[in-house]
Every structure is written in C-alpha cells, then in structure tokens.
Image 1 (cartoon, each protein chain N blue to C red):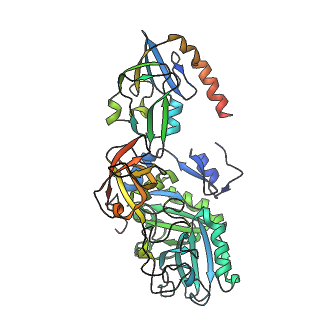
Image 2 (cartoon, each protein chain N blue to C red):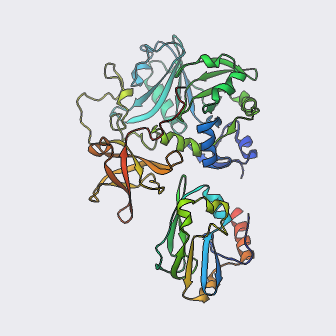
Image 3 (tube, one colour):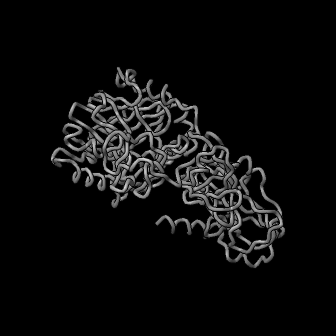
Length: 129
Length: 363
C-alpha cells in the first residue's frame, strides 16, 4: 500500500497536498484498490464552493459508485479533465496524474482535522483488524 | 483475507485465497469476486478463455417419468419430449405465477434428470420440488457433493479438447460424460457469458484436481463472479433477485418464449392477461452507469420504471442497464429515458437486446 509521506489524509481515503493555499486532492492507493477499475469520474463544477468533508465528486468502478468528499473547504478552481477520457489514471497513478480537483483553501486551520502519513498508516492498520 | 466460517465454502475456497482473489459473500457462499481486475478478466473472457468456480450453484437429481413423477408440471417448458443428453432452460413458478427460480433441466436418461438452480434458492427450490413431486423419494439434493466449473470464452473448446477428446462434438445445449484428471464429469455446452463455453459438473472431491488440470494450460485464467455479472448483463441474461422474483411473472420478465402455453404447469397464467410493466434494456449516453435501484424516468421526469441491474460495459464503453418499466417504453427502441433519482438524472436510451452482439456463443 503506497502512502505519500508529505500528504494529508481523510478517514474516507482522500489525500490532499497543500501548497500556497491551493489544495490538490485525489483518492488514496487504498481507495483505488478497494474500488477496482475506475470507469467514470463525475467531476465538480469549477467555482463550486465546498465545505470540508462535503461530498463533491463521484467515482464509479465497474460494479459501484462511491462518494468522494472535499478534504478542505474552499472554492474548486481546477478539475482534472483528463479523467473524463482516461478514468483509469486513478488506478495507475492515484497520487500523481490521477489527481481529481484543486481547491482554493478558505481556512488553513481545518488541516488539523486531517491525518498525516503516519496517522493514516495507523488508521489503515486499525481497519485491517 | 480469510475463509469465512459463516458462509458455505466451495472445494476451492482456499485455492481462490491463495491465488489472491478478493472474496465476497454471494447467495450464502464465500466466492471469488475478482483475481486481477474486472476489466482484465472481461478482456480475457471475451477474447480468450476463463475459468469460473460455480460450485455454489444447486444441483438436484430426479428419477422418474417426466409426467407421472410431476417434474413436467413444475417447469414452464415441456420436459417429456427432451432428447437424451440435452439441456433446456425454463422457469419454476408459484401458484400466482411469480417466479420461484429459473433453472436448466438435463435429461441424463429416459427417467433420469438433473436440475440446476441458483445458489441462493437451493433450500426453497428443494422444498418446492419435494412437496410437488408425486413421490419425494425420487428427489435428491446433491448440491453439496457436486462441484461446477465453467470454462468460457472463444478458446474454451481448444483448451477442453486437449483434456477431454470428443468435446468438439457437443452442440449448443447438449451434454455428455467425459474424463478429466481421471474423474468422470458431466460437461454441457452451456454458460452465462455469451461466449462459446462449457459447464463442467464433477464430484466435490475431484474438483481441485480438475481445476488445476485446466489451469495447467497457460491459456486459461481464473475469473471471478464480478466479471460474470458484467458478462451476463451485456448479454441481457436475467439474474434471480434482480430481473426475476416471486413478485414478477414470466411475461413481465420478458421470458414468454420459455413458457409453453400448450402444456400444464403450476402458476400457468390465464391466456390473454395484460401486463403493465416488463423488462427493458437501456444504455447510458456516457460512461456513467446505471445501478440496481436507480429510478427510470421519461423526458418529462415522470418515473416509468426501476433499474434491476446496471453496470459499466467494457464492450460498449458506456453504462448499461436492465429495468422493469412501462411496456410502451421497454418495447420502443431508441426512446429517450433518464436514470438516477429525483435530484440527479442521467440521459440514456432504450435499445434492443443484447448489448453485446459479437459473442462466440454459437461458434
């Protein structure tokens, strides 16, 4: 199971990487493995205002659809349109080319509600037992 | 991942786990959902050959004259006229005409039959057989000693021919006995994928060895139930609990051609009965896929049906769905429909069955 050391994580298995107030987010290796082949990503509208942990994306695999939640509150400023043609990018490179959306963060303090890599690793261990 | 204790295990449960399968409960059984990925397994089945463990399915043995023992009266298709070593698909109905199960009857001898039923319905079906056959002593449920392996795909005949010479003579919906790994197997040319394929019935204790013998051919890949469902939806085959239930009649299920109005059977509908809903097939306008339970709406937003099965179709690269809908919609190919819920609807249109038209089924 791959975990990026410098990213932050949610209990719903989203990752987020924050630089200059912009949060790039996607789903974790654990999440893409549990979903299986991703066949469709319902991307949010740009300019959409989202709250932290609000559902704003839907990712579909062959057999099911899963809700994806915003790891930070703010305004969606960019979405990864390449996923429309190539949703499998989420399976191949979930922390890189499989990113889903960028959010202009409203309140940086909310990052304290997220887990760091070690905490997320422990959280995954706790799920396995 | 461990072998679940509360579910039935097929003889291959530990083999699946060792092969890295993701296991799930299905119809009371601990079954492999996928080994690699559903899309990879789909590709393998449609273009080459794959092996499924279907030992969860139920098998009943019945001895007696089709008519006088009561078997014929339990099935919507005529049974008494079946040629020896042939199979016939049919339905078993309750007194109200609802579907208890769909099944395949095998005629092994003039008065010797095997009936194959769905895993989740084994106990219910066995009760129905025992209480409706003239003499319940001619009935035996052999589900827990009969394993079943499905070898499906355009190259299945080439693979099986090496193990069981003569298999190439089997035509569609017929069967015979063959040896594999020293065990006597009943092999029929049947399946649930739309590809050329065989269903191999063998004794429980020989199953592992037969599975291994088939997989020794590097052409064959083990395949899970996840893709089996995608394959059957692409072919518009019904699945009990989705398109079929005790609340749905054969006409509503669109299975009239498997009901013979010229014979008597339990649950026979009075002729000329009108139905208001029936099974129809629709495709999504995009990769977004309908899911079982999604509402189906007309262009004005009126709910006209419900999705019974839905999946992404690798063949069409689109979402596909089967639904119980108002007859005028189901029968009118190209009609625009929407699927989803009151808030969020996705465009689609009704199409003619099957979704996948290039199968090797009758090759």
